[in-house]
Length: 553
Image 1 (cartoon, rainbow, N blue to C red):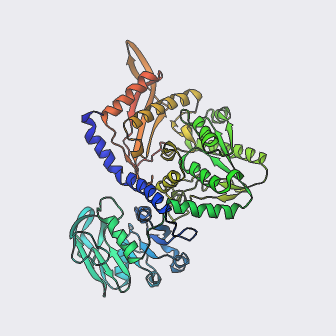
Image 2 (image 1 turned 90 degrees about the vertical axis):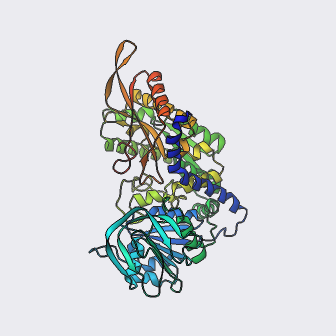
Image 3 (image 1 turned 120 degrees about the vertical axis):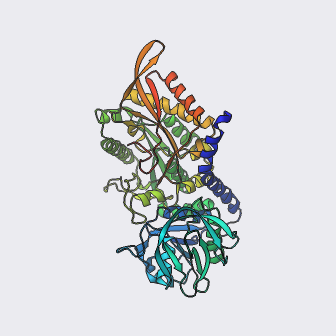
């Protein structure tokens, strides 16, 4: 790569380094802990995170898991009895956008502080604790948003092994001006007189800053202090323990019955299929529907991987023409999604009827699917995931969802532990409707699909050559229903437009457009225009999420 690319490449890599290292470390930790099966067959230690509506609540749960401690994310209103039922070793109260003084603001149930387990309040969570226990919380004259400087006066147990002066990330206007009686004020910040509190006697702790974000350099140390030193977690939860636990549960659930898996070829369904096959062998049959909407050579790769490499019983249905006929003349994106989804269900049902004695359906549902579909934290439904809400009610199967409590990075770690190929484990997310929703504003035709497939193949090839594939959450091409004038040689052209979309993200809840090096973009555009005759122009999408979504439709 040219020397002039270095700053852009370094910036892109810096934005994603933490997540890549975390997943890599998760895989390394899993292999190491596999040699010491200290808690095989036991329920993992659990720390409950209560979501008060903060944008980082899901990230808190993920960072807890990166410390080797299982976490469960619940809505703030579940109450002490529901928390107690999970038998957690600790409780974390998340941040949130409200003021503790707002009418109707999420409240703290005092019973949560009487469960006999350590409690950590973060930002809004700390303010709730301080107010409930007699501290002073008031609106400050100046809000504190973004990077701030933390001064530690007394490390206590919570801030142990962190420096006296350190950077941290703040996001608040209300401020704790006085700690509750019996609490030590451990630190202050640029605009917060009391930025960290603790009561060792009551096992209640609070921090005004956000330890879960990368902009708080010692945030993970603070979380480790709470989880390991205060809650007494052993830090042994890992991908390896997930595999052992799920194999046991799958065998108990399925018994000698038969299961069927809807295999898309994506990371989630592939890992779920391999894990279930590890548990019940040929009692599992995978059904792969090739709808003709996949990327170049992808269908053949999926079939080869599962028949030749994993040796999983597989039924492959080639249905491109069937889908093209159903999609003819359809331009509305939601109608496309419904047609593609319903046709998949119909084909899947047809194949399931041919298999005798099938009672179980395997799905690659993830924790983020459950949360985003409104099933995890009481948050608003952003979109319905086919793994959660898209199946018909009369589909008479009992669900087997071995990944339902895992985030995407953890699923990748499980896949690596299962010995799945690197190219499959690190495959970027791909929508269920496939290229059908990347042909924007027009109907889906074979010609457009072939153009988009070739463009996408060039994009992925160049991104892999540049060593950036694993550092991007997603990278893909979009074919809008427009054409643009151009000149090739001495002739006027009127060709298709290809839009490049590449983003970095933690978990797809938010995303930033990737700063791909200019030389790389030039090479991609040049190849697309020179090698794909109908393409006359290439553009770059630089919209972040929010306000845009990752996919165009």
